[in-house]
Image (cartoon, rainbow, N blue to C red; front, side, top):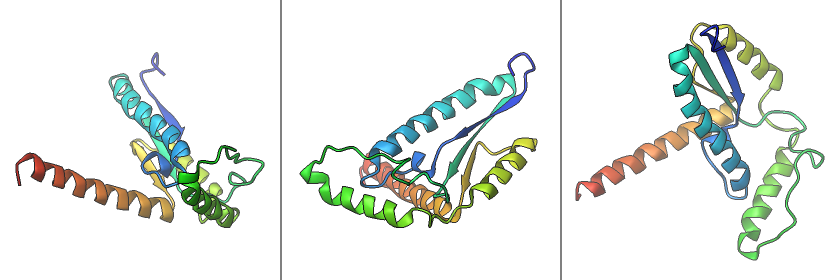
Amino acid sequence: MRARQSGLIITISSVNGLLANPGGSIYASSKFAVEGWIEGFAQELAPLNIKSMVVEPGMLRTDFLDDKSAEHGDIDVTDYAEATRQFRSFIAAANHNQPGDPVMLAERIITLGMSNKPPARFVFGDDAQEWATDKVNRLKMEIEQSVSIANGN
């Protein structure tokens, strides 16, 4: 890609690279790291005309949440027990009921990959789009509050 001065790097992340939920902070932290790396890397690649797209899907109907795929730690911390219980209940209920279609996601990635101007981020799924929008709105409010406080208001 560097020799050709063109290309596209597609990185699969998760909407959890933008937001974290109680009980899922370790998973989210790994996705936050991917997001930060790709955000910086994309800027390093831009002068070489190499594009980058990070894919941030919501919940997809796959076996990802099955016990054979998702492994939970066995250290229980009493202070986090309720958050852990709620998160694991959510996962169990969502397993094989996820709203996102992985085949549709693959089709969209291929289409975007062949386009001249793929987005830097592709948030896929109604759930992911809702959660990401909520996060952006909360972040905007927090920034506005910080500016107000910084200005002595």
